[in-house]
Image 1 (cartoon, rainbow over the protein chains, first blue to last red):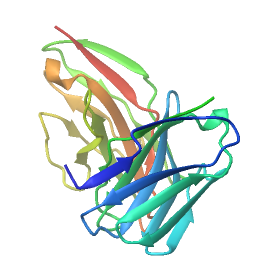
Image 2: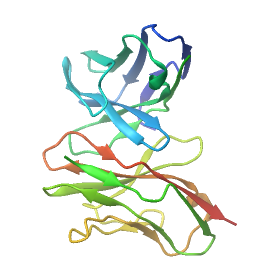
Image 3: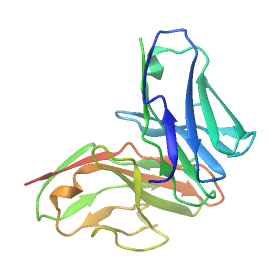
Length: 112
Length: 109
């Protein structure tokens, strides 16, 4: 497995609270992505990064922000969690824009 | 806009029977197509991509631009093929990979 670590693995939180998920890589890959996985929707891109401090929105970015201050870390923040953000969140990395993605193990987030 | 459609949420096939997982796409330019697989308790991983035209674990997929399809096929299903399969598309020069909704394949012994 590529060196990708997501933390926490599981998180239960209350509506309205801020939540930060972390993705850490040891591969020195340029690209990092955050996806959410939901039944009936598959995987949907939230945000991605193409370098330190370089990020862009995906198809479901509302309610989420990201930061990448170091090559190895990509943080996903839910500013004020809502029940609709209950999901499994996957981080992925790739060496280049046209290269294959390597995925993390996922974070199960429940917003009550 | 780029879109991927996997019409089957669930597919059950007997061991030894042929498998075909359907994938159709919508993209105005020249796409790159992929199949990703998630086995139980494992990470999502690349199964194959149309550019390489290789066969992985007996699976093949041919890009049909006329029908805008990239169906995944295997002539003889094995129990270890049970998994969740995602078709994905990336437009040329685009950094974003768009996934379909996935098909859960179950191989019946």
